[in-house]
Length: 104
Image (tube, rainbow, N blue to C red; front, side):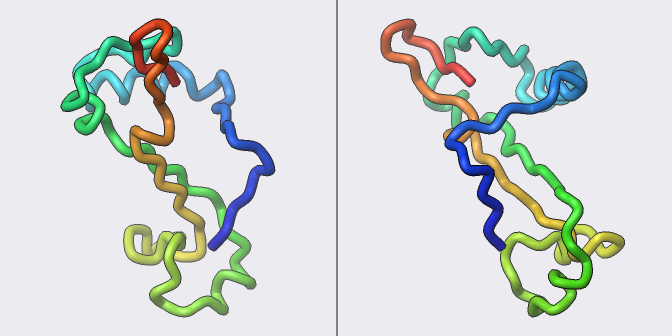
């Protein structure tokens, strides 16, 4: 499954900011700060992986085989044709050498 937004950056809607920050703090143990976070390399590796589930096109995705990567079949039997986008920490934060912080 290929999902191409046409840009290298993806931004969440403001409506998701508060819920995202709440869950991030619960999982990571500290606040997510867009302005930058001073983290050790170990802390970066322990950050949560973000998983987005997008509603898939049922007719097209039904035709795909059971093992097609990117579909939700293995984790969501009610919505097996949805598409999962998995975003590891290295893809949602990067180290800013000028400010010596990880920024998102």
